[in-house]
Image (cartoon, rainbow, N blue to C red; front, top):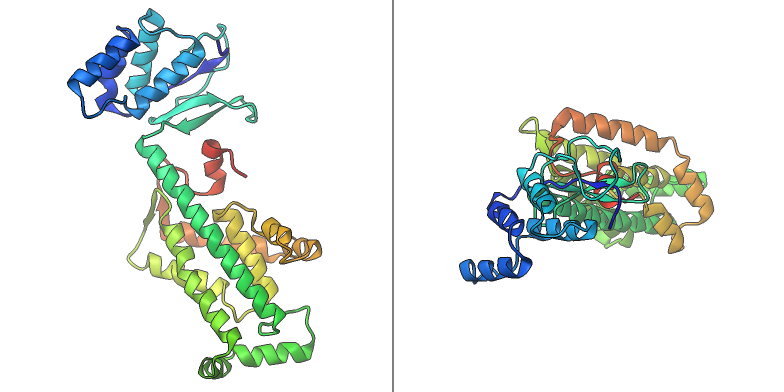
Length: 316
C-alpha cells in the first residue's frame, strides 16, 4: 500500500456512470456490463483507467465504501483532497485543477506533483505545448548551425575577428552586398536566407502556446517583426548566439548550448562566453515585455513555457 495522500480530479462527465458502477460491482461484472452496452468500445475511458490504477496502487478494493467515496471525489472534478490509505494528518494540498491528478514525486519539494489525466483536454493541450517546444528546439539548432557556418566563413560580423574581416563581412551583409550575393549564388547568402526562412516559425510557435490570445489585430505581425529584428543574420554573431540562448531558455528546453558543446560545434570557452553575455537578460526583458504587450495568457490553460511545464513533466 502506498502511504501518503493522493488527490484525483477528472473532467469527463461521460465516465460518471462507470465510476459509480465500478464502486459497486466487481471488475469482471463491470467489464461484462460495458461490453454489453458499448460493444464497439471495450476499453474504459482514460480517466476511469487512471482512477482505477491509482486506487489499486493505494490498496483500495473495488466494492468497498472507501472505493465508492474515492470514486465520488474523482468524478466531482473539484479537486478535493482524499485519503487513500495514508496516515491521518498526512500532507495537505490546495485544490487540484480539474483534469489533473496528484502523484508522488520524490524529486519535488513536497513529494507530490500535479499531472494531466491521460485523455483529458488539459493533457491534449500539454502535449501540443510539448510538440511546439520540440519544434522550436529544432529551429534554434538549425539557426545556430547557420550562424556558425557564417562565422567560420567570415561572412558575418564578429567582435572576435579583426577589423579587416569585419569590414568585409559588413560589405557582404549590406543591402547591395546581399543582392550581389544572390546574383552570384553565394553560399553565405543562401545561409542567411535559410536563417530568415526559419524566423517565422519562432513567432508562430510562441503564438500557438495554449492559452495565448492576441490583444490586437496586428499582434502577430508585430511579434514576427520583433523576432526577425533580434535574430537578423546581419548582426554580430555573438549577439545572435546569446539571443538564441535566451529564446531557448524561455521557450525551448534550455539545453541548446550544451548540445552544441556536445556536438563540438562550440568549445566550452565559447559556451562560457555566450552564457555570460549581457545580451541574454536584455533579450529576456524585451521578450517578456513584448509578449505582455501583445498577448494575454489564460493561466487556466495548459502550461506552455518550460517554467510552467515543469509541474507536468519535471523538465529543466
